[in-house]
Amino acid sequence: MNTITPQELKEKLENKDVFQLIDIREDYEFEDYNLGGLNIPMDNIFSSLDKIDKDKAVIFICNSGKRSAAIIHTLKRKLQLDDFYSVSGGVKEYQELE
Image (cartoon, rainbow, N blue to C red; front, side, top):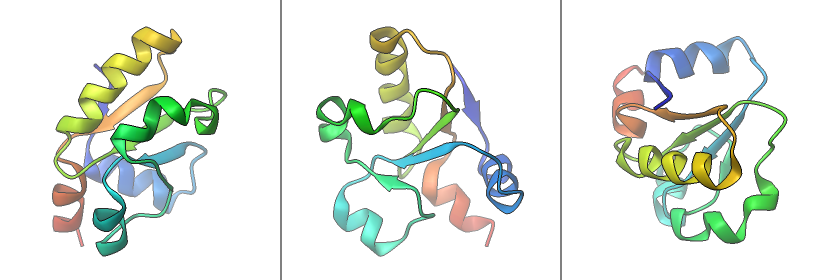
C-alpha cells in the first residue's frame, strides 16, 4: 500500500507540489479542522469518482489513516490506478506537527 507520513504531506503542501488532496472524513469533522483539499465523505466516494483527478497523485486523508487506507485499497482495485496514497496517522498525527 502507498502511504505517506504527515511530515511528507506537510512538505508537499509547503512546496506547493502538484497533487489532489481528498479528505474522506465526515462533513462535521472537516469543518472542525482541515488542510484544504476536497471533502468527500467515505460513504460518498463511489458516487463521486468523477471528482477524483486521475491525472495526478491523489492523497487521501482521514482522522487516523484507517479509512483512507481502506478506501485506496478498494479504489486501486476498482480503477486500476496506482498513484493513490494514504496519510499514515491521518489528521490526528498531522495536527501534532503544528
